[in-house]
Every structure is written in structure tokens, then in C-alpha cells.
Image 1 (cartoon, rainbow, N blue to C red):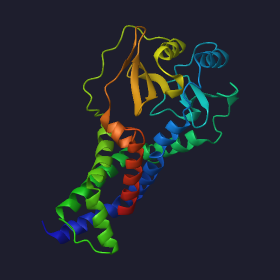
Image 2 (image 1 turned 120 degrees about the vertical axis):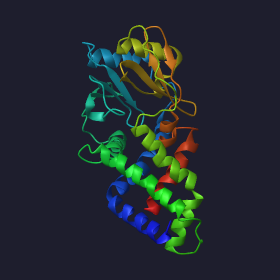
Image 3 (image 1 turned 90 degrees about the vertical axis):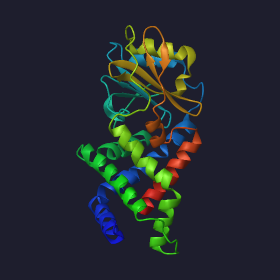
Amino acid sequence: MNKNLLHLLHRWTTLVFALPLFVVLVTGLILSFEPAASRSAIQPGSLALADVEQIVAKHDPQGQARGLMISPLDGTLTLMSGTPGGHGAPGAGTVIDLATSERLDPASPGWSSLFMTARRLHEHFVFDLGWVVTASTIAMLVLIAIGVLMGLPRLRNSLSGWHKGIAWFLLPLVILSPLTGLLMAFGITLSGPPPAKGAGTPSLIEAVRMIADDHDLAGVTWIRTRGGQLMARIIEGGGPVVYTVTRENVTPLPANWPRLIHEGTFGGSIGSIINVITSFALIGLL
């Protein structure tokens, strides 16, 4: 194909999607720091079962809460009465200070609020225009394909030379980031069919007690219902593990590799470092 035509397509595709791509990439850079920040804030053994039971008894005496979210960065626990979308919004329920067990203003600023705002923009752009993010992700993959079709570059100490050099040197990372994002957008997990529903769903406090039997509650990110099943996300070892919780047992789910790679939550700090490098590279290429 004519290189001039490819160059023209590359330029105009970039111009058309420049704004949404900029928002997606900058928020992606912010989110790339979240896994490492959350892991470093977790203090093993700092959250006892008795503390959670006291909080639930005090702030949810009627047992209406259907999930909870724990933020080690802010030192808070959020009781959620409904099923939150995504990773749950800090203002979606009752926010409690873990140090005092007292209720906090959900609108108060914190690291969780910053990361959640970045996540909403990253996944839904503005005005809940999620399709714009999906279209921009596809456009990014098209730009990469056009760049590859243009052939190997002549590396020079110029803006164009650096652009081509970064793109080719980091090509696997540059491809993986939008590709895994697109797989997530279409619900592709590469982990096989979803597990069969277990016999009975425990209450929230029962689920907490079951999880506390074999896991450190300080590592729990959230407990909530997804797809009709109660699930828990727990930071363990090198990254997060999602479990299904039934009245009988707590069972780990197969790893969702597109999400682990896209969010940089694999391999401990390695995933976060790779994500930061990829984010800076993609912003520079834009």
C-alpha cells in the first residue's frame, strides 16, 4: 500500500480521536499507579473480624447492605446497599472510618475518589459515553496496524525518529494495552465459562466470616454480587484473586488475564512498572 496514503490515514485517525484518546491515556496513567499504591498501603493483620462485625452491626443493623468495599489508601470501609458498577463508587453507600468506626461524608476527598474519577473517565469518558472509549480503543489498534504497515523506520534524532523508535521498541506493550482493554470491553476473560451457581448465597456478614477463616481481611478489596453470585476480591501474593462465596465454601476463580495485564495487577510491582512505562509511551506517541 502507498506509504503516503498510510501516513495520511494515520494522521487523520489520530486527529479525529485525539481528545478521547488523550483522556483515556492520561486517566490510564493515573490508574497505573493504583495497584502499587494499594498494595503498599495494606498492613497485614490490621483488620480483625471483630472490627468488621462491629462496623456492620453499628451501621447496618437491619442487614440491608449487599456488599462492602475496603480502601487501604483512605483507611475506610464502604457498606453498599445495592450492586455497584465497576469497582464501586466511594459515594455509593455508607463510608466508615476504620480507625474510629464513625461515619464519614461520602463526598470527602481521598485517594479512592481520585482513582474512581479517573476510572469512570477511562471506562465511560463523559456523559456515560462508553462507546466513545471502545471506538477510540479500536482506533488505537488501527493506528498501530497502520504504523506497522508503514515498515521499519530509519531512526533519527528528531521528533519523528523518536516517535517511530518508541513505537517499534515498545511494540508488544503498545499492542497489549489497547488489545486487553478491548477484550475487557467485550467481556472476554480467556478463563473459560463462568462457574455454576452454588447452593445458596450467604449474607454479607456470613461471607465476611467465611473469608476471615482462611484469608487476611486487610487484603479484601470488595465483596459484592456479580452475575447473581456473591464474590470477593482479595489482594494476595503477587496480585488480586477473585473468589466466589457460597454457603458451602470460598472458591478462587480462574485468572482473568486480559484484566490483570490491562490493569497491571500481575507479578506484584512488575505489572505496575510495565503499565506506567506503557502509559508514558502511549501519551508520548499521541
